[in-house]
Image (tube, rainbow over all chains, first blue to last red; front, side, top):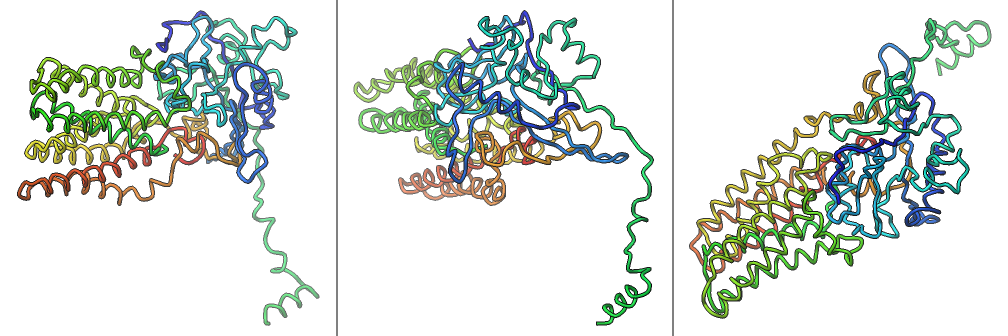
Amino acid sequence: MTTLPARTDRKLGLVIDLDTCVGCHACVISCKGWNTENYGVPLSDMDAWGEAPEGSFLNRVHSFEVTRDDAPPMIVHFPKSCLHCDNAPCVTVCPTGASYKRSEDGIVLVNESACIGCGLCAWACPYGAREMDGAEKVMKKCTLCVDRIYNQTLPEEDREPACVRTCPAGARHFGDLGDPESTVSQLVTARGGFDLMPEQGTQPVNKYLPPRGRDTLATPDLASLCTPATETATGFLGWLDRALERI
Amino acid sequence: MHPAPSLILFTVLSGTGFGLLVWLGIGLRAPTGIAAFVLFGLGYALTGAGLIAAAFHLGHPERALLAFTQWRSSWLSREAVLAAATLAIMAPHAASSTFAATPLPFFGWLGAALALATILATAMIYAQIRAVPRWHHWSTPPVFLLAALAGGALLAAQTGLALALLLALALAMVAHWVFGDRQFAASGSTTGSATGLGGPGRVRLLEPPHSGRNYLLREMVHVVGRKHARKLRLLALGLGALVPAAVLLLPASHATIILACGLHLAGLLAQRWLFFAEAEHVVGLYYARA
């Protein structure tokens, strides 16, 4: 049923630290790898060796520049995947019931064998978290690695989403955001975690942590050190400068 | 948004077909015999053609029957249920008018109400999408409803009614553009809110996540159409509403009705193309192309 559950027992999700992310795209690759080999149809690539290659991904890293009036600009690497919203607009628009939000842990999933590939859920998502697979014509989205986190055949340290497991910077955290005592919830409180596009009313579960303030230095007047050397050139260089000027 | 030909054809053809069925259902025009066969046939052919065109939009049309199950939450599912119900309920009225020269008002009126609800459901599929601010406004459903009813009245050769509805459609289109142009700013979504980095300063995309195209850019960040928006608006307003209205003022004949119908449908195709092409999705904010 594509109505949303009134409440979920847990709110499993990610906390992404924009201060720590180095923009290496390892999470993108590990996500693509795990989700190509496991649950659901593979994440296909189209025209992979041709002139215009493209593919389906569940996680992508944008890089933004923040220009500030009183400080140097900042580069912020910005990983983006499904936010497993409490008020997920992608779920209620689905005409077939393929798109659903689980009441036990809040994960938003697609039942691929019921998906007709109409694409309306991707239109309804403000974040661009859903992509239609080019080969299989069914909607793909982040599963929060539902086939890892409960997988008893994996060693315990691997029972977290592939992106979290692989992040070399420790910029991604996984846990229950519905439990105020959980590590992720405390991280969100301590660092002032925020929602993406709160004005869209989606109530995302995933949170982002803002970049910390940068160190500041008393910046010297660099411009004064950069006056062209030829203006004060003397001797041979001075003569050369004047001679060239006259030509 | 990507102006898919299948969706443009579907919304225009089936909208006009359901509009015609509304007028035939309430007996505004109560044809019998051959005339009923032609008019009801036209209504069913247009809606049928539209529904087939819509099926081409699906990745897995073989599972389309599942789309009848989620009417509690999904406008797309409601549209499917209502469309099927309209065609089924209207059938006895159509058959009886054609073969027994006896309209069945009960089925006709019920079918007309369902046809009207179907057109509304089509409009609500778009109007409900908050992530496309231009569509998420009360001015969207009137355009769909009036376009369908005006087209239906034209096909039913109800000149007076068609004239009034065409003028109302012109107003509705203008309202949709005037309000629509302000909707993105009114939604409050900016690159700053999309990234949460708007507090510290001004945010711009430095590097996109991928050098090639992807599904999101193709489907939701269609920018080509916005360039010619002004010309297409004039075309939609003129051909879709004002010129056919003027044609209806000429002495009535089959030729004027057919001419008005042709112009109206051509204008409506332009209007619908633009409806998709100029709609900005907030995901464009992540790609610096909103």
